[in-house]
Length: 253
Image (tube, rainbow, N blue to C red; front, side, top):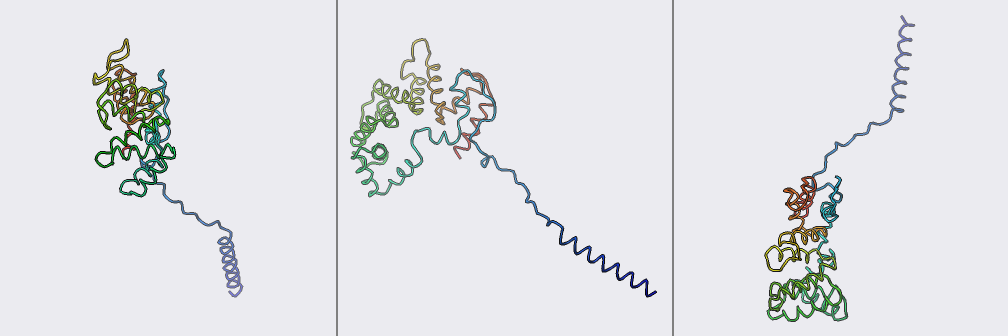
C-alpha cells in the first residue's frame, strides 16, 4: 500500500513538472483583430483598374482621371487656394499679396486679380482687369481664361465681345487649360460661335468637352460620362462611365 502511494506521488510530481515545462515552452496566443473592409470613400481612387481601349486618347485619359486630378484641373495648387481663401477678411494679407504682385510674383498677381474680381469693393473692376491682364501677359493660363470669359459675358468692366473672348479662350485652351475648353464647348452648344468647317455645333461642343475632360475638369467629365452611357458621339462604355461617376461622387463629397 505504501509502495502504491509513493508511486502515485511520483507520478503526480512528474505530471506537474511536465505541465509546467509545457507552459514555459508554449508560444503565446496572438489575438488577431477582426478585419473591417474599407468604405468606398476610404478606398484608393487613384487608379482605373479596368482596360480602356478607346482609339481617342482623350477618352482614355478622361476615364482614368483621379479625384486629385479633378481637384487640380483649374491649374491652381492647394497652397494657392489656401492663401487665396485666407485673403478674405484679412486686409493685411491682401496688402502683402499686392506688394508681392508689384514685384512680379505671378502667383500673387493671380491672387490679387481674382480677389479683386470676386470680392473687391465696388468700383474695383478696372484694377482687377489690370492685374488679370498683367498675370496673363506673365503666363497665367487661369488669367487668360478669365479674360476670355469676361469678354464673352461682359464682366470685369469689359463690354461683351464674343469674338474677342473666343480669341482669349482659344489661347488658354491651346496652353492646356480645361476650363477654357469647357467654356468654348458651352459657346458652341449655345450657338454663340460658329463651329469649325465640316462640323455642326453639337459635334464641335463634344470635341471641346473631350479636350476639357481629358484635363479632368469635372463638369466636362460629367458630360462625357453621360455620352458614354448612351453611346452619343463616343463608343458606349458603361464601365468607363461608372469609374468617372464614382470618382466624381467622391470629389464632390
